[in-house]
Length: 77
Image (cartoon, rainbow, N blue to C red; front, side, top):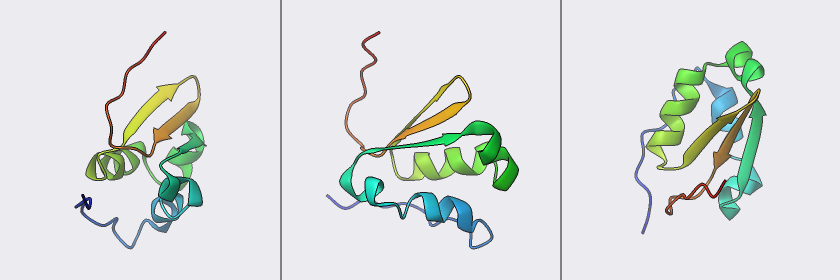
């Protein structure tokens, strides 16, 4: 089933670049420093793109962890 999502605004090339990583295509995990996200883009824009793609994002410590998979998420511990 193909995902339908709204494209990232052209003004935010950095977020677009994150989602062009090979890990995204494989359904893997992408991790970024939260402070860096705020410096070059915004957490709001990143969250919007993650939601549009129906992926999952976890904030832990100073890291944003994006699970590039639309499947069920279960936190074990």
